[in-house]
Amino acid sequence: MPKLLIINQYVFLIYSSDLAENRKHVHIESKKGRFRRTAKFWLEPKILVVEKGGFSHTELKKIEKLIKENIKLLNEQIEKFGKGQKIRTIKL
Image 1 (spheres, one colour):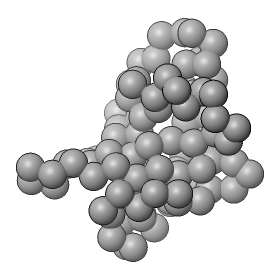
Image 2: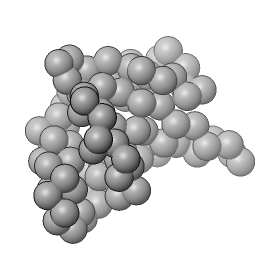
Image 3: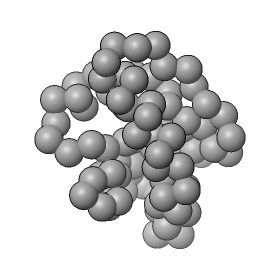
Image 4: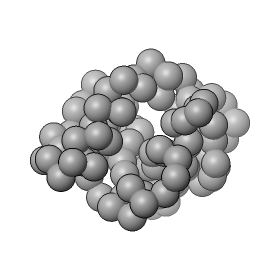
């Protein structure tokens, strides 16, 4: 599961099995103490939270904003992964 992007405490990643799904999406992980939370957002046709994964409404809005600001970068990383190219994690 390559890490596509890291922004603050949020890690944006994709799983190999995700490439078989019809809609492009990304998973977002964050550790809070001993607990790991994971949300899932569709990237198309519009950005939409699919799984909240224990994140608060405020955090989900913040994550959605980060996705909107970095959608081009996320799509480029996913395309590289889909083509079998090596993914280099980008930290912002």
